[in-house]
Length: 212
Ligand SMILES: O=C([O-])CC(=O)C(=O)O
Ligand SMILES: [Mg+2]
Image 1 (cartoon, protein in one colour):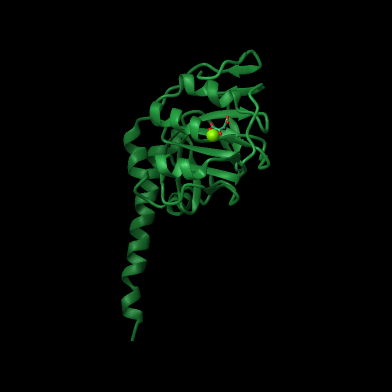
Image 2 (tube, protein in one colour):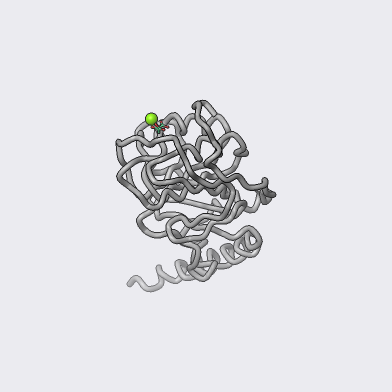
């Protein structure tokens, strides 16, 4: 950690297997809405979780973090063990009055190859996050900074935007919002998404004939 703080209030989990990146990168070619349709319109986060770095798409695998609202010790500690392609998925108890994330953590994420950040809570420093190109989604934005005392959990499933997120699940984001694909369903969802895309292309092809 780049901060000096006791971490005995944090609960750590054993490491987990990450799914192969190929199918997730392929899923990332499709809109979040279409992926959601392919999984029966389930696994989509609450509409309050919005992009705060417009235009930056997100695709990677879930690294779940639970932190007390207004505190980010757990996020600092999580970055010690994070792997390239991980997405920080943070349950900050939906609190939007105090940010738990910002540009210094953002720079650490970039250095570690983190694919993006999704926060059921608030961030700050959004201009800097946009400039560094870190896809960031959050329930809110606040200039108020966080404390660093814990408690928190790392690597245990968390709720984020009403969706239960397990370590290693695929997570994708675009200007519409966020979808989570359970790890064991990534390949099946990719196939269904392709089929849904073909079905929509067939519908679009009929449109010109309707114009007189
Ligand atoms: O102060 C904090 O811990 C949050 C923040 O703004 C940063 O990481 O830059
Ligand atoms: Mg900052």
